[in-house]
Length: 282
Length: 303
Image (cartoon, rainbow over all chains, first blue to last red; front, top):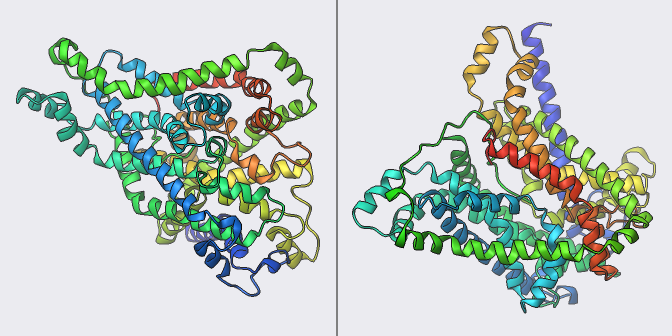
């Protein structure tokens, strides 16, 4: 086979593969839209395309006009509150710890790094049972802070790694110069360290926010009343009820899935630019 | 666990510059500053890692729970499911991700555009997509069987009502969800390989498959091993996929250890047995963790 023929065959193959990937990727997402835009009675018919597409179920979600959706916006608010709190706490604790390890060079730094590494490799769900009891004994039953603290525990180790790596790219001479000028570690942290770490902070903030927004198991176990639960827990309840209006549920699921998508595509550049830089360069 | 593309290939990273310590170590007020900066993390670690781990081990220390557990046929089935889930799910996913990362190295605008779409399963929250899979696989009115009927005029199988089909469905949904993330990781790994190596290889006559075997694969091997270990550990703790796609059914036949532990603890109200279920995964988990930490601490691959 000539080189040109082989190359043409290669690009046809790539095109076919690309098309298959597209179908594979979009099929479950298409199914969400398909269910959401149908009337309740059509959901249980055998449609591949919606016969009478309607946005009625989205209206129901926005107006909370079905009893299952009565607290939907409250629950979106809970998800957002938990997500933002987890992001801020993870950033604060992670950056302080990495500053102590990489800039103050405390002697127990290696111990902390290993503690973070061990936490990082514990499967989160394995601690659900003790956490359920511990949060009760801390007086945090049915309290958003129980979920926030668990998420922070599992997000901080990753933050410490990334910050420590990124910190290596910030010249140490800056700290020394500031020291000679009489700056305290706190001033160096706020005036030099944090501003120069901005790309890594954005990346980890996004990571922690999305991790908390997506959490199901801990939110399900630690929160119970309709006014404190997050959206994924409400969706899970929906799923387990006998008379589930699937079109409402899918519409609610789509509304819930949109904010992280928007955030992801906005900060994608930061996430790859900030993080691969910290990882690839020495 | 979702994280971003930060695992990067070995070798692309130089040694970190070393600096002299201030005043030869921390003394006096410097020590106080250091302590102040690590105190929050130390508090989190003691209150929310050491305490729950210790408490969990204590809950699972009762030997009677294990006698009860090993006598339970559902547990044995769960054990087999977990092994299948890990062995098939993780390996098929990572191998496909390695191949696809090569595909996404192709030049051209449509490949870049496709990558943006391809990332969607990972960027969309897990619960809605797994609920969608669950609905799509419904034997009577799910999208898949509707499509099979339209295309072939025949009834598709009841995907979630037969144990092995349900387990297969869970694995397929799992691969769908996590394939993009690992593809991006391998893509970053491939991009970190210097172009000169490929040029040198092609001068020596190695192109296509042979440059993959002699250049790409040796340089990605370490990354691939670390990804396999990490992914196995995370998948061992995966609760959502099984819980939402098959729900452990039909007849409790598709549980994995993570979901069975929660069921035993909360649905059956026996936290000792729930914790025993989880702890029974430690003989697999601990060697993986030790091997992984060794790999990571030698600095061959960076997180």
